Image 1: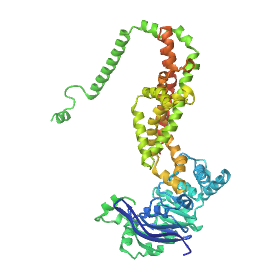
Image 2: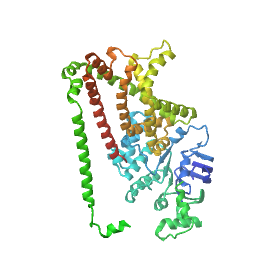
Image 3: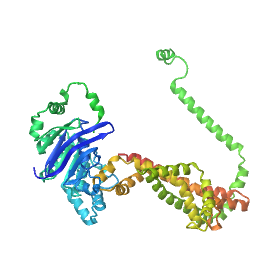
Image 4: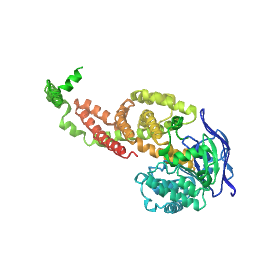
Length: 264
Length: 277
């Protein structure tokens, strides 16, 4: 592992009395692709959202590119420019065209001039294969296309790190492939990526490391072949068996509670 | 259990459901027709026409009723609307502020100005403001006073509308903007408010219609001949001619603007219904 790009130290996060993260330690190296997997309510989305401080950690430290985000005096807007984020629900700006979705943040946040913002927008739409949709409105695009635009929008800011929060969970199954292809391309180009996902094939094939979380802690952390192929913990095995073959799951005690907790 | 009896022998006696429905609808038409006829017969149309529809008096009002009165009504309304929109925006943002006193002040403002009749606000602006700040002239004379009074009233309503619009923008929009490095203020201006205004365009247009009518209250401020708007103009003319035709003409001038505006609002509402994502 080269020098760590993301460092998470003893991270805790509570929502009221509900402790979602119970002490997470994690390092992600430059150019590394880490997939975070785990059951609903395990805290994996909360962990990801703590990395760019969309959630304020209750305790602990987060460093990205050597800057401590959890420092109260840090210029959080400046740090976030280096961190791209892709959401489950895409969150494109519906009142703007595809190109404007890419150019407005560049112009308002990075103060790029009109011409270079437009050029960078076009380049990034090209990268995700949507150059022909430049003038469309988000509502006229399929979910998969919207998510690729959202990735292009994040990339146009020139981030050093990309965070993906279940990027394919809201997509129709046949549209998942296009989005994963874009993410695979980014991984190959050496982007540092932290991906919360349920796509085990993607994790196995693309990730350098897989982190399995349950109950607000990291249960297992290692190479994909190890964590997914030969998990050493019972909880990991249990989760994977339910995920890979949902039809075989037995009715068990406590699953009702788990479902009602929702995604953390 | 009469229910089961009916089910066993559904058509034995009484009217069928279809017959009942037909009978009920027929009765409603009959009542309506009777009411219209009774009204038409009982009103004295000749005297009404004499008092309200004198063509030569109506003709004498043109073009001044348009070039002066309607023009002033529109000017008063628009200036009040713009001022109210700006003030309403400020109050809405204060209401959503994380600073307690701002939220509190905005709440008090909304409760007071939403609860008072517009007429009292006009009197307040006409009397209390000059008393409280002697020597200060409100910019724009009567136009400025009307803008102030109408703006104060409408800002309270618009603040609540704008706040609702801002809160109707999905939370993910702010998160996306923040994750791209927008500051909270810049995200609000560039991303949230433009979307909020699309949502609240129909209710804001309704507010414009209300203001259009409230602009008639300007007569309580005291206006010069050149500053008269539709109601005052119509009323003045009605007393000089001893005939109410000018009031009818003034009323029609209001409808000339409010009916198309209402039509636009309904169009926007049905369009935004279709566009819901």
